[in-house]
Image (cartoon, protein in one colour):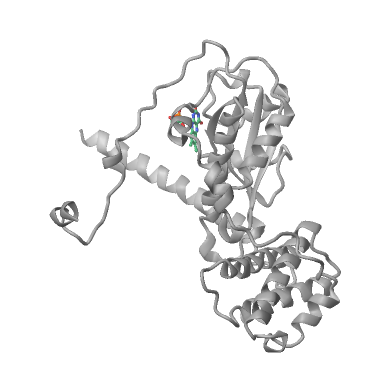
Length: 339
Ligand SMILES: Cc1cc2nc3c(=O)[nH]c(=O)nc-3n(C[C@H](O)[C@H](O)[C@H](O)COP(=O)(O)O)c2cc1C
């Protein structure tokens, strides 16, 4: 008995030691590759701030009653970052420029129509945008989701969700690239913090290469040698600039992964999420393959393929709703039932 508890204690110390190494490794990656420690003139840092600020403005514009004159500080930071970028000779790509131009127009239009003319905005900003040639026509009208919403929810999501299962038995059929493309296209609508969209997908649709990738993942024993395609979901951590965002990559990447898996299901493809709960040693070994850029962290892998006829699935029972959800209310149950 005494011996067993001594063994247990040693085991705990070893676990703690490994945990410490892994935490230090994660910390090192954040210091090295996120924007927390990058200089003010670093391109990735500016790009991340620009995307976040564009979104802050468009988000405020979508409120029920945006406050006239709002956002001067954000607008000024946005302009500063655009200025800095042009000074370093770097350029935003076309997509960012389009977003920027779109929001710029809507913002200026809103402020002007509420008597907060351009003169009330921080000096020099308008010129800086105009001078940078960012001021093209807006790309789209303000979105009103109502019309789309009415039709889009006309399907049984519960049925859809409960018909998805993790598939660990695929047919040998190759996975069509256009289906994988479509799945990424659907998943890119996933929400992300400040709409920064840090998630990336690396697709391996050659079964031999998929097998190579899966050698580094521990949860595919018994089926990994017959997986037609693998997607590695990663997060570009250079887009995170606040130390408080230390967990954001897992959240944004996890949400994206779920959308991706549902998208695959909607296209008739089977999939199985594969954890990347690996030691720092395995992560470093995997990086040596060169499959993913240094600034991307692996969120998870997803095995993908056509489902083999006659394949079985694990029942993977779910907890009942009342074990998951707690409905908080200031009213007593009696008052609620009367109401
Ligand atoms: C992040 C994550 C990692 C997972 N890793 C593995 C894995 O390594 N191997 C595996 O066979 N299944 C893995 N799964 C699948 C789960 O076992 C499965 O989703 C769960 O049992 C629920 O079953 P269902 O997907 O069929 O509904 C993983 C699932 C998630 C969400």
